[in-house]
Amino acid sequence: MCLKKPLVAALMVWGSLAPLHAAAAEKVLHALFNVPETGFDPAKVQDVYSGMVIEHIYDPLLTFDYLARPVKVKPNVVTAMPTVSVDGKMYTFHLKKGIYFAPDPAFKGKKRELTAADYVYSIKRLSDPTVASPLSDLFTEKLVGLSEQVKKAGKGKLDYDAQVEGVKTLDRYTLQLTFKEPFPSLPYVLAGSWLEAQAREVIEAYGDNTNAHPVGTGPYMLKSWKPGNSVSLVRNPNFRKEVYQFEPGPDARDQQIARQMNGRSYPQIDRIEVSVIEEEQPTWLAFRSGEVDLLSGNPAIPQPLLRQVLRMDPKNPSRAELKSELKDKGIQLSRSLQEEVTFYSFNMKDPTVGGYGKDKIALRRAIAMAFDTRESIRDIRRNQAVPVQYIIPANVAGHNPSFRAAYPYNPALANALLDQFGYRIGQDGYRQLPNGKPLAVDFITGPSAIDKQWNEYWQKAFDRIKVRVNFRVMQFNEQTKVTQACQYGMAGEAWGADYPDGDDFMQLLFGPNTGGSNYACYQSPRYDKLYRQSRVLPDGPERNRLYDEMNKIVAGDTPWAFGDTRYYNGVAQPWVVGFKMHPNFNAIWRFLDVQK
Image 1: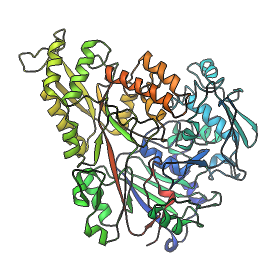
Image 2: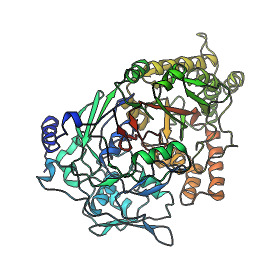
Image 3: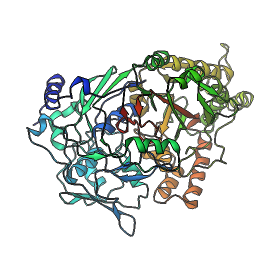
Image 4: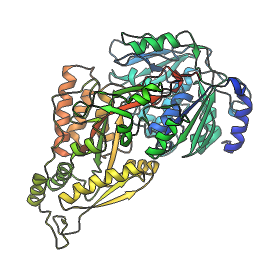
């Protein structure tokens, strides 16, 4: 029987179980989102803003080293890295004993230990048809026996008690995963926020409201949530004893962080308060006034304001530093070229821009060639970005810096292409479809000032080729719904590395991932065949050759108009200790201290 508790009542119970330190001794970190979160059930959400909270409430099996570059994976709730069979298909994990979930009414007053069965349940839940997880493609077809259980369930609930050979416990603390094929990127996958341990009794207790009732074994627990407005996290009183043990390299900043943090118990901060501020100017004012402790990752320094904050070299976007007035106040800067790609996806199922005929490909190529990426990098990104030329970005295994997949800015050629394939200009001055019917591109967008600026540049692009565009404004969570349902024409997207391996990016156009991470709803048998070959290979020349072939296929079909990769410029107040941006964690709050 499902027990559904009102949010307010549950929060009152949580509050009574997690008393805060005396106000004078309490350490509070103030952070921001610039886009509203969608919820905190790891199986139901995929946006970065929800992930920032999820990472602090739940525990993955493995995790990333905070300071190491290139990024390294290390044990989290397991005693050591997994043992792997000779054929690369079987992984065995041994969980640490004495790790407990945060207190919650679902546990009926008992202290609930983390076990291997919790990961079995959590993996199966990602594949449960009734959950409709955007991460359902992660394990369903890969683990031995799991897809058969999903087919047996049909549209109904998965049988969680049925034995599945590919995901099982050997004893209370031992988890074994057996895959149909080698899965060399698995350690990276398990270190990201893809698979977190959830307790079955919690999920069953809160039914359809699990997004508002996250209960994990991580360092924090949810105190309150006002959707689209604020999130408040407090220490998990059941959190295990952990000590910072950073192993810095030669970088002076890393060595300083290690000196400051090593040997301290983890985490140092008692409470994390997150506010949602969508506009750039209020975001920066909140930081300048000291109301916010850091701008890191999402958001970093808002790009329209970079010229107020940084001294930049327009000829070399990799070079920038804080202006003197901010340096003198002790403001800290951490910057890096992100492990990300931004792109504009065409819905390949859309009747206007979708399809695989030559006329449809010509339309998509013409749109891509009409947009001046150099101009948007100069004016909107403030030269703090580089054009995307390959599906996999720099600093990620599998990137090819010599490949050029993006169509160059060329309005004249774009117009000639449309003329050639019958997109004639009508009496109203706009092009028609080859069959003579009206042509208008549906373009979904957000309501913020930066969205409006991007729309102006895209309007110019469409005007260059005499094509109508209709901007459909909606909030971020609504955009996510329509893209995953393939109910749009064009949409701007960004994908940051969950882990620094090319597979995390090449899967974005894998056909079976439609409805999840395949925002373009792209279906290419040739691409899918090569992707299936690539995902069982380790990083190396053989896999890179396949990646080049897949990029050629994408360049031919044009399901994306390539965008840019941004330099992120994070800043923190002088009193924030341990500050360094990380390319794979959604948020770094738990690694920090506040010493005002």
